[in-house]
Amino acid sequence: MAAPSAAPDVINAQDRPLAAASVVIFAMFVLGGLDNAVAVIARDTGLWQFHFVRACIAVSIMVGLARIGWINVAPKRHWAVALRGGMTGLAILVYFGSLAFLTLAQAAAGLFTAPIWVMLLSAVFLRQRVGPMRILAGAIGFVGVLLVLRPFEGGVNTLALFPIIAGFFYACGAIATRQYCTGETAMSMLFYFFLSLGLFGLVGATVMTLWPHDIPAGADGFILRGFGPMGHLSMGLTVLQAIGSIFAVGLIFRGYQLGDAAQVAIYEYSLLVFAAGWSYLMFSQTVDLMMAMGMGFIILSGIVISLRSRQTS
Image 1 (tube, rainbow, N blue to C red):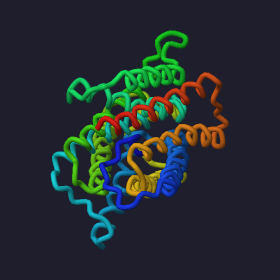
Image 2 (cartoon, helix red, strand yellow):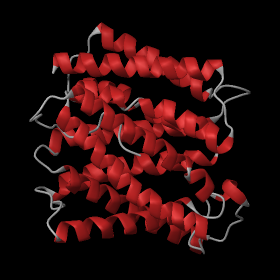
Image 3 (cartoon, rainbow, N blue to C red):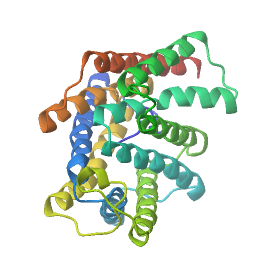
């Protein structure tokens, strides 16, 4: 999964909006399928081991590409890229963890609160001016998230708030990108992102392995499993996740090179549609009218915040 509206600032050498839209939307199509596959991996593998193995594969691929000169993974400021990678890694850790008890469409909706969090955090800590239009857009987006996640349906469901926490950490990663990572290459930030996830996965899997506790069967045990044997299907899907993530993120950054950043960020919201579509095709999970309305509110909110932020920056 790539960050919503968290791509680095890129100087557009060429303005090709149709090409930008095409590559980003295709990237979201790929990510929608890859992320839905995690529900299959969760049946016999742990969250922590999944992230550790996926990160090892991705890091190995990127090191190989760097050695032959295809990409540059060396950052100018290690601490800045590591901070950004840690925040974004935490977001994805929580995001994938929430797939154990929520649909991908719900988890993605929570993650896409990131632009709202960016607006709020920038106003409070960076003293950036937020106009009434963006405040209204943020409120609409928040209502949309409530319609999708329904945290108060049948009592208070605190688990439904986890994707919103993921959105918060994603926002922190986006702010770190803009504040501290100017001039860093996209591949160096992606490299440190996978390094962070690999470290989190290693620590988590070790703790879960050494801590004696009951582990439910199937996807219910996703968060609680430590190191253990992976089935052939889970291993194959994890390898596909690693390769596909690098490919999709590469497409996203290419999209930001081809078009205006504020407009390209809007195309990332197509992930909500593809997440729901893949969920239906793979698991027959449907989206009811209330969830569809909520997704519409989130997309509208993101579009307004993105465009207004661009105008006032």
